[in-house]
Image 1: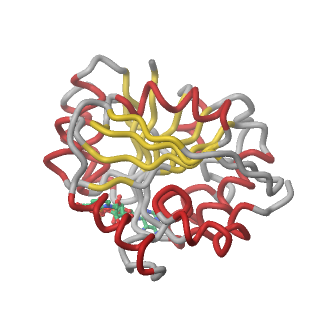
Image 2: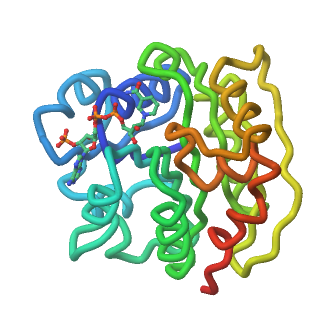
Length: 225
Ligand SMILES: NC(=O)c1ccc[n+]([C@@H]2O[C@H](COP(=O)([O-])OP(=O)(O)OC[C@H]3O[C@@H](n4cnc5c(N)ncnc54)[C@H](OP(=O)(O)O)[C@@H]3O)[C@@H](O)[C@H]2O)c1
């Protein structure tokens, strides 16, 4: 598959190396151009802008530092969503607040593209080895498209189904072959105490791991297209 990655920080670079290793073709873009070198040397194609990257791939992964970075990379005349992206798949793996993830989901789907958010637990080592812990938030059809890619990056992938019209369906987890981590235990603790640890910062994580908070977080899933 031809996959694009926008954002070659520590995590993006490791994910890119993993995707090349498992046989995908990679197109890459990063704000600081020097960071593309290692992956370019390993065979990735460098795009001149996010919009050029999106035009040449079937699926785009973004893993950026914060909401402002997401705005810059997706928005604007040379952003990922600037061109015709109908039918493409966008997976945002940044760890950002629920409102940020949801606003992005709405923008992407309004362009006729599929969207999944998948914040991850783990760091550079697990990213390089495809052993991250992913919590995917996506509508069912979009999730089906994202899953094969995320399964190559994650040893465990949980899926929080949601619908942008506010309807919700149940969550389920899928063990990709390893034990639960300490991170998962944090989520379970949150469900018991009713408080949200600062590390649980995405709507998918909230939805999946804190059942008692689902009512409170429902508004995160209500954004009409
Ligand atoms: N590091 C970890 O162990 C880890 C683990 C799990 C989750 N995460 C999450 O993964 C995401 C990325 O983390 P990271 O460690 O890879 O961060 P990082 O090394 O600091 O990389 C951040 C990336 O965001 C880009 N960026 C920042 N501001 C931007 C802007 N205004 N416009 C365009 N691009 C911008 C950076 O581009 P430049 O190169 O141009 O600065 C870089 O590609 C974060 O949401 C983090 O919470 C990290």
